[in-house]
Length: 151
Ligand SMILES: [Zn+2]
Image (cartoon, rainbow, N blue to C red; front, side):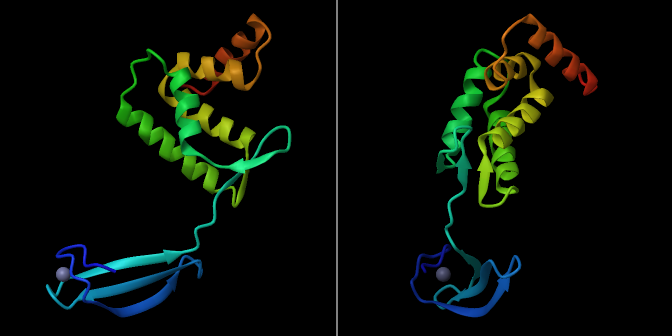
């Protein structure tokens, strides 16, 4: 482990303890060259798995969330920074489901984010995600947005 301050490889572990209910190890290290201390975490690299509607499993890819959202947000006045915050919130929501999350759970998390940020994008995404079949579906979703109190 190289020192992040001076890039020396002469670093030493001075403290090591389990964190996050034992799912990770936190290590305090000191650099023998510059004397500065830093922390590292070791945790198992277990991928998050998505169960699709047809039952297939695939690894969670944040790029898919980003691209699904970017279709809905095309030409909408939403900052890239806000979009990235939404992507992070969706990933964190997905991780809360444990090791396997369903594509429906992810879709709901995307809708939650869009509902708070842009109603046009919300309706675009909902029309695909909820497989809208007619104008009645849009009216139902508009009513839902208004019930949330921010429409
Ligand atoms: Zn150093």
